[in-house]
Amino acid sequence: MASILSKKQKKKENYTLKELKSLGCDLLSSRGHINNLPLLLSFISPESPPQFVVESLLSLQSFFTPLLPQLPSSSSSSPASSTKRRRSDEEDDDDSSKTESDEVDGDPEVIFKAWLRSKFDEFVKVLLDVLVSQQSEDTLRDIVLGTLMEFVKLLNAGRFHSSIYHRILNAIIHSAVDADMFLDILNSKYFKYIDVRYFTYISMEKFVKTLEASALSADKTVMENSETENESKDSLELSIRRIYQVLSRTPPPHKQAEKSDLEMWSGSDESSSEKSKGKKKKSKDQDSNLLSPTTIAKRMKLKFTKAWISFLRLPLPLDVYKEVLASIHQTVIPHLSNPAMLCDFLTKSYDIGGVVSVMALSSLFILMTEHGLEYPNFYEKLYALLVPSVFVAKHRARFLQLLDACLRSSLLPAYLAASFAKKLSRLSLSVPPSGSLVITALIYNLLRRHPTINHLVHQEPVDNANEANSEAEEDNESSRPKTNKKLGMDYFNNQETDLKKTGAMRSSLWEIDTLRHHYCPPVSRFASSLETDLTIRAKTTEMKIEDFSSGSYATIFGDEIRRRVKQVPLAFYKAVPTSLFEDSDFPGWTFTIPQEEGKC
Image (cartoon, rainbow, N blue to C red; front, side, top):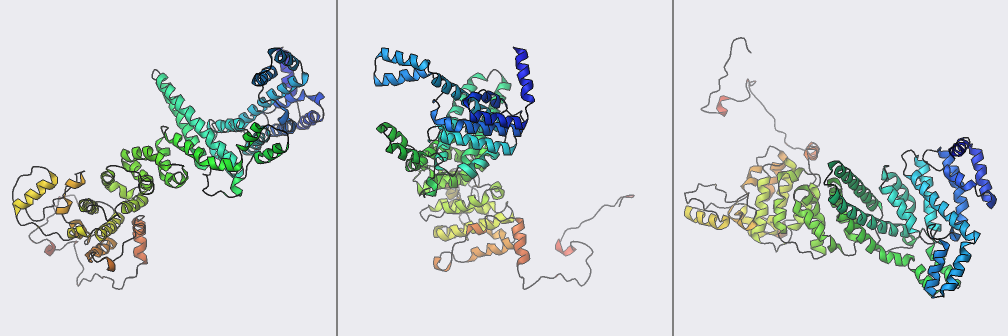
């Protein structure tokens, strides 16, 4: 037996491309050459030369395509069992069903079609192996994927064959090859069809449920072996990244679908019209209408929502987590059937703190303003995000614009607006010049929107020390020694997290006054804008935060070199200076430099 196999293997290796093409022509010409089918199948493998794979693929595709409507639904189910199921549904006698099943078992045509179905399943399997093999070329992958999508279109009597398409996506997600190559082909050729997008969302939801079940089972079994735990964790992260790649590259459902958006890859609309002409049962007509373009368009948003909501329940890697938060307010929320379903995911993200909270603020703000989400302690969490690092973060522009939008309402209490103004002014002392500029703009808008805190611009000191002590105790609820306090005492507690107890209403914006002497000229010039009377709203306008939120050292330098200066300060000395500082600069101080021999 081994010698026979070796001879066949040797004979296979000796085939030329011309002989392989002749085998395919013989297979297509007559059923008598059906033994060429397994031989052609053996050439479709990642180890075979690409030209041999393509030639065998084209021959087998031409052979199977006209036979697809005649093949049984599955090679695993025997003809007798399928006949018995049909007869049981029709409630026929047992004797008649046994007689017919025996007749079917002996029918050579039925056995031949079942064998063809098994070879077709093998054909699909080897095509999937070639598709995701690292040895395959990109051109070959394109041809193989096109062949598989043709089977998706034709196998199920003109209706979309979701099982094969699910296997294609499963192979892409679990392959060692980068998924971008496959997604580029799907996006350019197939994602424009509404049924392809529809079943993509359905498959993604199934994959996520499978991952959730496998993750739970892995947590129970990998505790004994750390290596197994690391492998399962890496495999889980890879699958999550691939699922996110597919979801992010699949076009979202359109609000008003046009005719071009209702185009289908499978001919379900054509097949349904043809079936209506023939003598078919009403149940079959109803099944065909289930996949009509209009029905899919109505269900698309629901499938989109289920796929994304189930995906967001997975333990996302940090980089995927950030990518999702950065784009979810534009790519996901507008297309959900019920955006409020994201409230759990976004509130948990907002509670994490740091950069993740900054990135979650955009989507959370949309849910609060447009979908009626109530989030307790929202402003306390927003206040906690005001740290120096946020002014150099990657997504600072969007965060600062949302910060201005959150503080826009005139119904905010005065203590809250004062706390934010004071917190921002304190940060202006420790952030880069670009941060000081946007902080000045934010405080300018706060003072204009809330006239009740304009006294912070110039707060008169309290003369009575005891009165000052009592007021400070009420604000901070801390026992401080009642001693005489010097002028210039700031009652603002920068470490306080409760906005009612910060003492900002008793403080002043003295930090802004220091910005008037900032080393960066644009900052010192811009700080003088707060000297105008902002209580007269008719004579002032709000500043656009987007004009300052993306600032940096480069933008400030570029603005300065483009700026026209009327008066240029010049340094003129009657005598050439011999030192950096003169004695008059430091009266009463003497500076001596000890000199040692042998050292200069």
